[in-house]
Image (cartoon, rainbow, N blue to C red):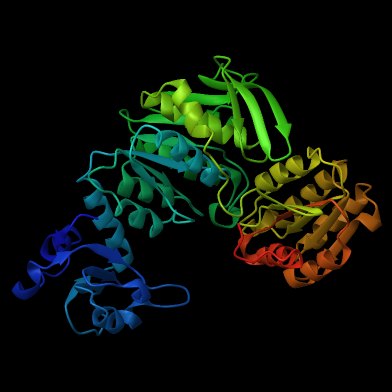
Length: 465
């Protein structure tokens, strides 16, 4: 972040003016964690589900923070900027700060594939320009501002992931980030508890395209019917990507897709061969979105291909780890029906011989459709001849197991566990030589415990990735 005077920051968020002794103090960085505060930081106190940053203002100031941003009613003392709502003010400041930079901002949203697409775009654009992208899961109204506050003069682009669990949230993030390019990966059944329906998801994801007005460019997945509907209503130019057989002749397309264990190959619309060091057919769409964005920004296809050669899956997203006697596909970060279907397809297409085990946890935030969607997933697992065993974890997974059994899957191939710990014990005790294990579930299921237990069996520290 650029050094900015405290009075200027205060004015950008409509804070009560700081006293004259504070006005000219320079802020070097914003921090929301008192444990990481260093001299020159501005501590931004945010209320949270588990902790309230206001409780740590004194600690942050003692660690050298220039001042703290707090809600107006908070009874704190010291150098403070008081605002009506510290969380909203963080977004307001990031929006103001984003306006100081000429960097091209690429917003990425979608029900599935956001992070993979973000990483693929960053890998491509980094071949030609200096830029940044969202780190980890920083994709909400706290994470997006923190990403934008990392912008520096030398940055030519920023790839900003935008997540949402209800309508209006993407619109707010777009006000903060003001993207010139908007990438939409898919509209699928995710966060239905907040969106209410698939139509609500479509409206919510469409907010990114609407935010582009007439001057931005939308980069859209033409293989998704609901994304196509959003694009057909767009006021801005649209660049489509998809497989070559898609309707409407996508501008950026793939054909001749070949799946190997841990890699994906295809030919681009111009015949250029592309090989991704990433697992799963779904990686093709992430790569195509990156190609489309690279072309928009004037990159040659050879340069784009070189960038894609450096692309790797983000941690806990279809990460392939090979040990002596075990192939572990760690996809434990999160799960929705669409991403679960992609995981089933990935495991079903695995070529290396060995028993293939799917460890799947409950999918959360699906609202009134949760039992139906778990049942449909169970039927898909039963139909997939490439899956030899399913270890299902959590209360909703009982619906999955029952549906898989009704669809004809052998009882001996179905196991239900109440917890990740129980599943980890089961897996560790029953692994076969050369087994392939794919682990996937919603964040709340903590299926990374299964991954850590399997790593430990092979003498690999749990921090391995």
